[in-house]
Structures are given as structure tokens and as C-alpha cells.
Length: 398
Image 1 (spheres, rainbow, N blue to C red):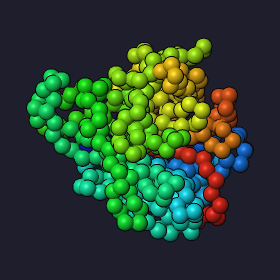
Image 2 (image 1 turned 135 degrees about the vertical axis):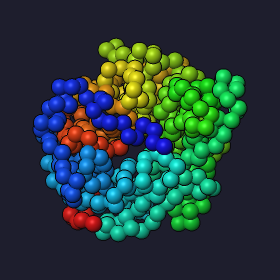
Image 3 (image 1 turned 120 degrees about the horizontal axis):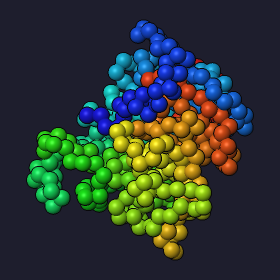
Image 4 (image 1 turned 180 degrees about the vertical axis):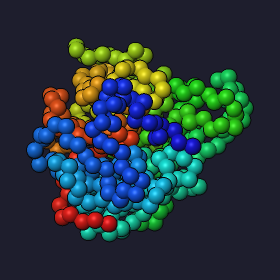
């Protein structure tokens, strides 16, 4: 089962935009062995923030982790076997050294699961991580912590009694899981299950017609560290980000959704969506500091939308007043809505580098929201996330 990962890019493109994309970039031949070309739409952001890290897939091109320059030149690309995809490709630090990390598997979300990889600065594999306790590795997240452990996502199909919400007594469900893993031993240090902490009624996804069809009610798609070391866990289908204690697993607060701890408001010049939410179907909660957080606000599940465009939002939380304020937002430059995926990274000079998920675009914005850089893949190509990061190694291929 693939949920949210295989949304066709053309779902989010207007007919005119889709036609222009087809005219501008012809599809490759099936035998193409090169990564998809990158078209630079706006040159800029010459600020020392580093190279661009993507993991293109789709469109008839090979899939794999890829480093490119701001000018679109390939620094490194690892072509994966047919049927394999990579996600969340970036640099991290492991045991005090810079490393490359990504998730890899046959599909982004599915019963087969995948593997998380760590490569050194000589492009050699030094470690792998997979989920423990019988769960399958979910390829949305692979985060190395300051403790040199790994925070990953996992999932398992199980059965739940949903009669309390008008469902069957034996409904198959997909349970979203966070695990902290000892990278050296593979031992699970910490585990958090969505079904153990969040009621099924909080989901915005309708029940399937059959009890035998797995209900992806939560769709866990991110786990990050807040500034105090606790977890930020994101659910696409409850429209909620949960702050969770890493010591106890208890929910500290909920932002968005049906049980938000915070009253939601929009600052002057900003707007909530038509559901009265700051975000919907969102990805990638990132703690900026001083009570501020960024989110990729998809606003669409690929079929229905709460806004006519996707955006990055900056939210200010006040614990004293239990208020969450949408303080600023940046719309997708072409005015498009993405049906899935995406991220918003605050880079070292405080620009925002944005991957637009199921849309083939990635962009960089100044702290004031000015578009500095914009690029795109050919039609049908997407990257789950896009990052801009420093990387000191020379070009290589593998």
C-alpha cells in the first residue's frame, strides 16, 4: 500500500502549467541512466549555504540520492536498482564526523519497509539502521541525534475495534511508530505508538469501505527534536504535530487538529485555511527557537484541498496564553498545491530552503520571504525532501 507517496504531479498543476512543463522538458527514454536534469528558474542565493541534496524519483529517470550545485551541476549521484527509491537524503553528524544519510526501499510507505543508510565522506557505507521489534522501517525520517542514536519512523498493520466511532470491530489499521535505535547494536531504546496515545476519532481520513482494507488513520511522517530535546511527531491525517516527552512518551502539547492545546489565530496579513486551521496534511515540523516553528503546509491530500496553494508557515507558540499564531507564510512560487510530501529547512544564514514534495520544484527564500532561488525537475519527477547543506568532499559517483 502506498499512501500519499505516489500522487501524480499533474494533480497539482494547472492545465497551462502542465502543458508548459511538457513542452519545456521532454520525457526521457526508458534506457536513460542519468539523473533527471534540473532547470534553474531563478538564479541567486549565492550565500555559502552549501550544495543541494535531493533524491529524485519518477518520470522514467533513475532514482537515487543526489548532490547538485546551485547551478544544477551534479556533484554525486548514486543510482539505485530499479524499483528502489531514496528519501530524506542529507548530511548529518555521526560520531563527530560528517556523513551522508538516506532512507531506501521499494516504496515510501508500504508493508515491505526499508533500510536507513549512513555513508562516510568518502562515499563508503559505514552503517545501516532498520526498525526493531517486528516493525517495518517507514522511509519518511532518519535523524541522527546528538547522542549518536537514530530516530526513525516505523509502522505495522494491526487490527482495532472501531465500534466507538461507528466502525467495525475488526478494522485493519496502520499504526505509526517512532523508534530511537542504538546505531551500533540495533537495539530499540525508545518507542512511541500512535494508537497508544491518540484516539482514532482525531483522524480526518474516512474509514475504508471494507474492514479488511488497512486504514492509514494517522500517517506518521516526521519526528524531530524540539529545542529542549523532546520530540516533535507529525501526523499528516490528524492535521496535528505532537510534542512528546522522550522520557515518558506522554504528549506534552498538540498543535492543530481536533484537540489542539492552542487556540489558533492569524497575525495581520495572514490567513487560516477554510477549516480554520494553520495547516492541513502538513509535513516537517522544525523548531526554530524562541517558541517559533516552521511547517510545510501541504493543504492537500492529493484529492481535496483546504487552500488552493501550498505554503511554508511560521508559527509562534505562547504556552502562557495557549495561543498559536500564524506569524508569516510563503506561498509556492508558481501558486500550486502539492498533494504530498515536502519540507522547509532553515539554513545557516536563516534563509528557508524548501522542497515542494510531489511538485517538481525546490526553492530558497530570504528571511523576509523574498524568492532567491527556484529550480525544477522534469514533469513527473519529485523528491520527498530537499536540503541545502555544506559538504566538504569533492565530486564522486557510485
